Length: 246
Image (cartoon, rainbow, N blue to C red; front, side, top):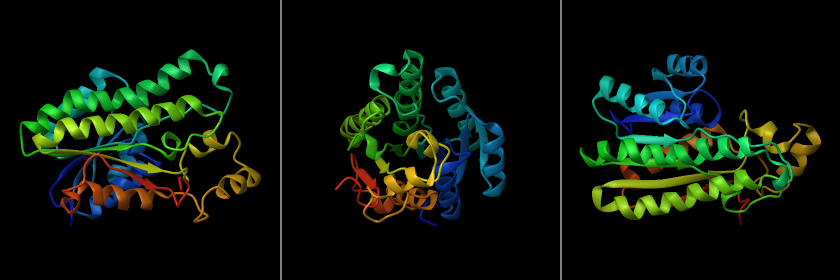
């Protein structure tokens, strides 16, 4: 019960890594807001793990603010947010990515972190403090060709995590990130370009441990960083990648 009675928002909580984080947080005693643009997925996960579903577009200021207000209206405080919602573009040359895709990637992957600061930092600093956990990627540490703008968005998130950590540490708000390698999530097909046994074999060959990240891996890492056991850790980027970035 490492998160007993903590109120935690998990964006993108309706599937993939987010669902794994919701499951672990719930098992550890947290009251979890399952926030997702796919409300049917959020409802399903919330029902399975006694969460509170909220529909949100994390790239939209009013939608993000509404999520925060709904959470406060229901639980009266927010202790943790996991900025997990993210998107990518299909593998292609950087100059061939459409401007609209670039804008959407940075709105979801980067602007959402800005909104968490804008709308949640005042709540956390006005109370007992809190934890912000950003779900970055090995792509932001060791970029691969043909995913350039996704790589850049996750690199931005890593820099933002460190900047936020330095500024917010005196206010009792810790900010960390986890950097997973690709996993069995809805984004896997987009990363690979084509989900075939051959593509999987090629990708797995770059991971020393020899497997993809799982939602359970993400849940375990997120739980530790958001718990009091990690009270001396802020500004850290925890690679949950089976050794890929070595």
